[in-house]
Length: 261
Image 1 (cartoon, helix red, strand yellow):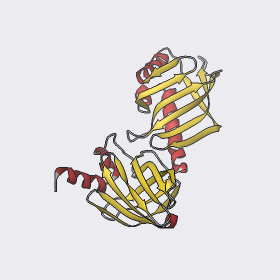
Image 2 (cartoon, helix red, strand yellow):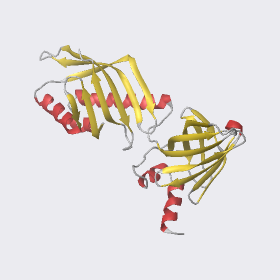
Image 3 (cartoon, one colour):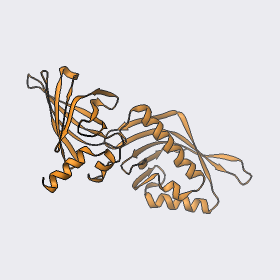
Image 4 (cartoon, rainbow, N blue to C red):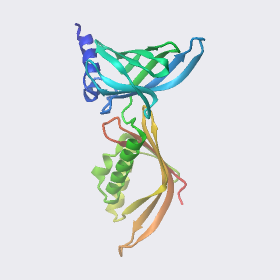
């Protein structure tokens, strides 16, 4: 067996954390979730484009998992086999489909054949693509920890929730980056100005961004602490956050803060 073929075999059979170390960019998703295109050709030669989410629950020579259009619409597979650099399994959905996928660099590509349709698949690792309830819980927890560090002026902890590639768009200050936001928090706290952020939970929306992470939207209020310990409302704004789990933990990669008043 050549070195290249041995690496491909290892990539398919090892758990997703090990798979992440051999793909670029790395995927640290513990669920082994993949997302991409599902292009259907019907017996009448009509072509339709859809999405596919593949979840490898248990890797190995006879892996378990499921496939569906979304992470919350999944059909479990049967008769799965992983050999060399290929994954084969059967789906009862859509009148029955036999799926063959090959691991190639950072992709799983292949075909699904059945009596009602044939399809091609092109999938990439999708860290952070989770069932809605789990996604909402994880983003909510990350959000709370982020702003606990913000209120406590804990700059090192705050930094762990920001991607080094952060782009922060604000309707008053324009575009700032990762380092500028850390410096701003450090400087403000050095001046003795502390802010507490309060999220309006009734406005909160959390949606997946397949292959990228998650989208969080809502309204937030910032309160400034007075010298006597009381607080006053400093600003109210709406926000849209893009979270990524590419590093293995949730980080903000894009922030849009607007409608300040």
